[in-house]
Amino acid sequence: MKSLKTLVIAAALSLGAAGAAHAQQALVAAPADAPVAATAANPPSAEAPVAAPATTDAAVPAGDATYVPLKPEAGVGQPIDRGVDFQPQVSPVGEQAYWFNHVILLPVITVISLFVLGLLLWVVFRYRAKANPVPSKTTHNTFIEIIWTAIPVLILAVIAVPSIRLLAQQYEPPSKDALTIKVTGYQWYWGYAYPDQGIGEYVSKMLPKDAAEAAGEPYQLAVDNRMVVPVGRQVKLIITGADVIHSFAVPAFWTKMDAVPGRANETTFTANKVGVYYGQCSELCGVDHGFMPIAVEVLPVDKWEAWVRSKGGNPAGPVVAAAAPTPAAATTEAAPAAAPAAAPVATN
Ligand SMILES: [Cu+2]
Image 1: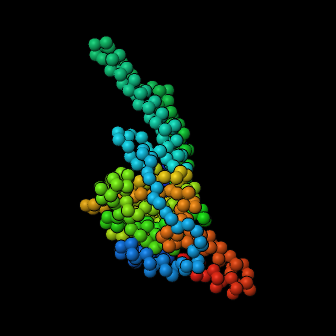
Image 2 (image 1 turned 60 degrees about the vertical axis):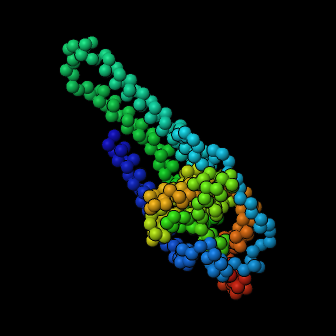
Image 3 (image 1 turned 90 degrees about the horizontal axis):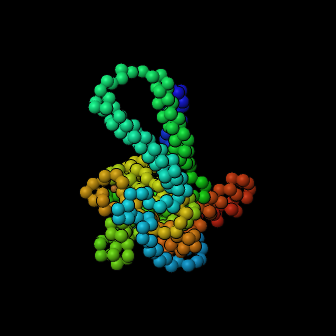
């Protein structure tokens, strides 16, 4: 039994090590983002210098560039009055976690709590001094001791399987076609940049009360500039802090990651439902900690592309960037012809 516990602990520790190694990879990737961070403290107008060298007019494919912000749906992606449950989950990891909580953990907790409560009540009433004037002097019962050790160990072992699987899922490296967004926490607002699309950092601040109400959005969650992502595509967040530690958290995606100055933390999510999902800074970061909400808008792919164009970016950015190195690397003779055309976009 002891060895089983050891096995479970070892599995958990090795997963932790995998997560740490993954974070190291993210750190290696960080220097590429550094120029964006340098201009980050400036207001939204800082977009131009970052975006300009990355995308030329010719590189942006023609298409609709009209973007109309989506209205949030009541009770989805935001807290509800007297709510005690998790928010409805809209990512595969979130659905898995929701299932784990509701199908495994809650029933196990309920059964154990009721069983222990029943035992206590039984002892209190059946063996009270009046009903049981001569108490038993029994001190050991090997059979019962084995049972009450073995059963909890078995319960923990059963819980460990989906638990470690869920943990591992959250640390899975992003796929190659994941959309990269750089998230920076500031005192007290967020900055988002889409390096592959050539969208330099823009700032996302909480809307004042009247503006939020006018927009039909919840006050203290509504922001002026949302993070906008396409539905069904994995999003890789590279998260850092500019001043103190913040934490980027969106409950509907089961996403939370600390934004630590000097570090590039990485996490992923895949939103599988169109909508607006709110979150909040989740690490006490100063006087306005409660006033730096997060709003993520999940759009159909074509509408997301229109949003990217409305920001002056190139929706196909990562596709071109991923394709460019192949001809150059595969045949050195073909490289001179292929390289100049691909280079300006690939340098994103
Ligand atoms: Cu914060």
